[in-house]
Image (cartoon, rainbow, N blue to C red; front, side):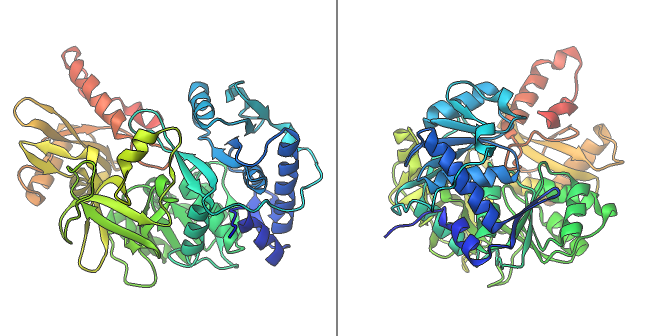
Length: 511
């Protein structure tokens, strides 16, 4: 048996050669042309001695060139290593060294960020070259991709995904939950270097022979303009994108068929607002870089339940384990919160160069996610929080996501992130970091309103006694709030309290 992720593009090029695969600005690239460009890139890479199993790093923005190099590397049997374009030179160098990349494909606009530790290919990959004939078949367990985690603790780790991992995840999700057809048009607003935009977006779209309209950088009004201009039927995004779309409705309202949310929790109020505003269903789901990435989703096959991430996709099992038990998996019954564990075709091979880290998360045939969740009697999964983010106040566990969902219901609150801060008596205290809605004045009065709001709706040990205000949050590449930055900012604030500074720096959102 052989399989290759490269077949996703090759087969669509055979089925619908003249259908547009990518729209990028004024450029429309058909499937025939994109596959030709990919095979041409493969020829250039081969001329630079890139072969099967070699790692090829991609430091590229959302352009057709990303797809051409990505599939070109796969066609050779090489392994793409997408790199976050927002990283600094030293961070890029770490990924290149850790992955063992033999070449770096980058854009002229980014070449200054590229360290000279590997061969940098830029204009060479854009030059015409005689395309290779086809893609090299691979074994199902062969390494297909190395995708680096966001590195919320310590250095980023490279998750190793096999061809079977990716092909089965795409083949499963193209039918359900994403339900892609050849006439669908997806707005590619998510970064292609990230697993959500790359696998759920680009690969799933190409597997259906559909069209992807690329955005180099997300912007609410521009996203709406593009969706209207190109008749987009599908949108995939993270919660911050949905908030931006709701703020940009003066630009128009596209006729979407369905939208999908992931990367972070989408407040139920925002989900319902999106459905009312754009007249389509919102499906929220859950995935990890380590699971290729989709684990569970709300889907057309059964009733959606806002506040949950639906049920596991075909071929994947989800269970809840005791989070405090190390070295083995001890499962809990339905209804009890614990660590989400996953098994199935989507689970990674392991972390590159990290046998100890791999052994910590791959236990007894399960992947330990680090997320706390609850399964109900019908198999719907509700995420409670990250295991490491749980606040322990006076011996009681407080799940920040539960508090956030209550606070975001306040009419003057746009966004909120809850963290634990050190406290002499209780060990930790619940602190709400808040982005107010436009027109709401941050200050002691609003802070007290929020404390009262929480006190009326939450158990005594759960509601926040402390409120800090910012204009925006520091976000990772997947749209998740970087709570480690909030911890650091609050700690710095406490250290400098004597100097008279009473609020967090508003520029946190620019980090």
